[in-house]
Image: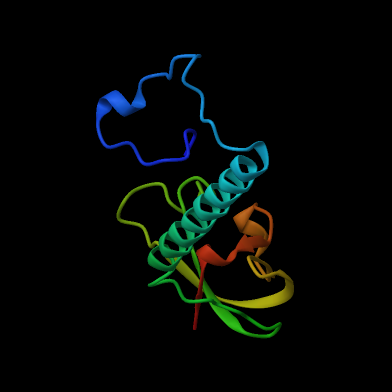
Length: 128
């Protein structure tokens, strides 16, 4: 991309001597470099779209409304009092959605004995 051509061998990647500069007009060289940059940009965008499609292939968007009932996932970091050992339950519920904050956060009606914020990520919620 830097030289405006695809390298065919490792020798093509070596720096060019100062006396062997491209002899093209400045305007044509600028247009050539702009075309190369547009080509690289389109290739990068296409690759990013492919990565995004592959990553999101099995993800499904979960949207809850206020009043819906959900199960919550009890992560050790978030709920240390509810997950003291590995044999305790990993989910608890049923809890009501109180508020839709954004696509990834919801306020849930949690009892006081949980001692955590009632705002939970959608990754920790499962529909009833």
